[in-house]
Image (cartoon, rainbow, N blue to C red; front, side):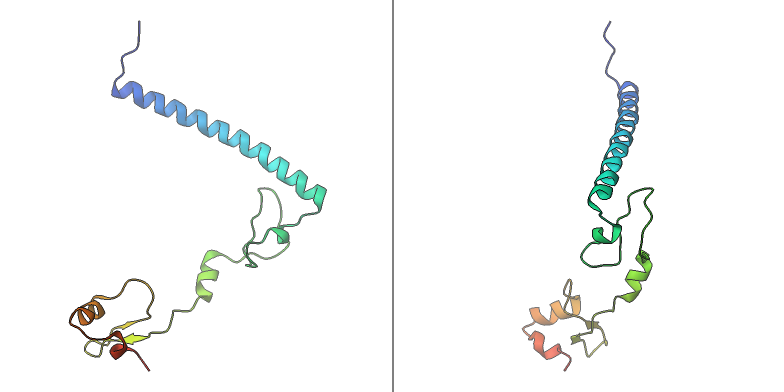
Length: 122
């Protein structure tokens, strides 16, 4: 007799498929990492060679020790500077760097026919 397709049966199938998929992913990941480590060893590739765009962030395969210190995400964010303000609302003192979405105070001024340059900080 054919199983009826109902919500509990579908949820059980989804759960089984998720468990199977995770098991397959872990097996494939293990094989891929082994292959990468072998190639790194064969070609003398170091973790320093794998740095992305000259940053200090290193991609380290599981179980491989890094040769350089790795900055945490909070350390990287701490070194970024806030962009300088380029526009000023003289009424409220609000500023805008010219990046991202145009603030409402400037949108309103532009809609009323004023030029953006009028609000530029010199």
